[in-house]
Image (cartoon, one colour):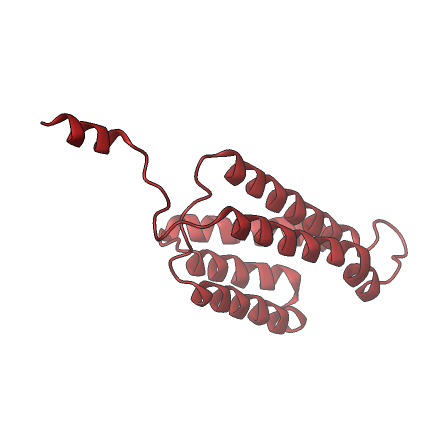
Length: 154
């Protein structure tokens, strides 16, 4: 092996065509973080009422929105601290449309089947859209989530 070939193999590749830019990671974090903040500050308070006895109906969605914001920022920070921000999304807008369709389905199912029934249907749908194909994991996750939601909100 020649010396030039050895040096070429040692050099780190510059930017691969499928790699995301750092700016796209920051833009994603800002947009999703802003959406989570808007949910906590404006959307959830406008769509919920004060509860009577016990927890306010806004507690569960607020906790979920805060967790979403924390995970988005943590994910972006980890991606930026690594040398490469990661690969481009292989499906592009297709993944966004599929996840959006699952969310719309959940909104339509919720008033009809209730929150536990919605969890029972939406957890497997979301897992399938995200690529999970092992039936046992899908069934266990769906039953666990629906059972937990039923226990909390019955």
